[in-house]
Length: 257
Length: 257
Image 1 (cartoon, each protein chain N blue to C red):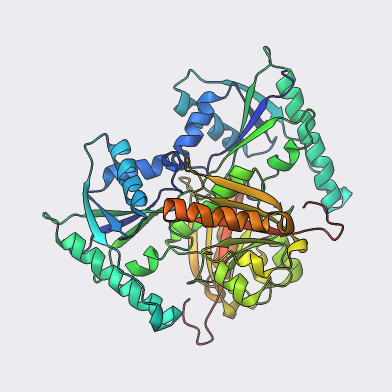
Image 2: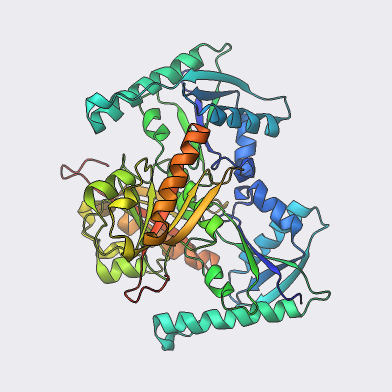
């Protein structure tokens, strides 16, 4: 392996191959090696999707592909320590996959679901590599953008702020003060159930941008149970689910925001 | 004009034609008419950029283009009322531009800087049209994503929230409580100057994705004056500027976040 290779993190959007940008297409064509994780569960279609995107863009004359087994995060190490050990393990898996390729590639790429800046750890894992590779980031369409596009809503009120957070935070800390709009990612537990339902409006989506896309929106008290039921059913049917939602406080007169 | 036409809002990214997604390219090709604003100031290069993108994608065999003069927002109406009147005026300008085209187009598109969901009012303006067109939204790369990609940073800390807000809010309301990461958009006044500079780290960028791109990052107390000076100079040179920044609270030991 070259002393210092380039690692390119390419945002590929949320499952719709047409989310790919021209910049992303070119970066895939320029790569000598693309690393693809195998998750060892029913998310196999995501690995397939990555290979389909590569095939589409390169017309068969593509870069080499190296698969690596995505290490499992251990739940018994505590949250932040668990993440730390997990990132170390992923860094080792990347290096092992790269070391298996000859000649040593100078341009290595990873296809990142959504955008490399948003709730993705590749930029942090990259800092564990020695020597540190040159890094290049190609932005991609996030699940949040796919959600607001599908519902045709702006994320912010006029001139107003919004906060992006996780299901864990909403569950543990409740609705943050002085906030009218919240986008929730990484929520496996329908944490919106912990809220006072008659105070909020929700825009929910799963499998965004994919053929399986599911969308529900409405006053939280009217659609909460329908989302929970549909989500559980879809998860059983597909073996996995990725979803996201936006919540807005309703005006005190109950009008839709 | 057909009783109900389709209005497609196409996110085109932040000035790099390669931010365009495949979905965006196809939507441009599918449009019968594209509306392009003329701002009547030195931002002419933005209108030019839109036409260049259309030309690129359609290889000359493109949709019709109708220009409209972007109404000016009156400062003396108060902020929210001024925005309201301004949106009405823009809606009238769209309709007048569409009415000038024969035969009446069924598919009309607007090229939206960044993403139609983020600090863009086209989705709100659209609701003022009678009859209401069918709406379609194509997500695009935002300035925030172009910024984090250029600096190769994640926007969120691990499992942590972040807030997106405006320069006006930061200036008027100060740093929001319980917040470690803030992204600031629409700031013409370097509102970061109102903060206690030794408590923050800043990642700043202007003309993101364009050849003129400017980037500065560092502890706020060390780079604040440099950003202010460079920003003022660039604004004079180009006649306009668009910039954005991310601020993070520094750890109490002064370490870089």
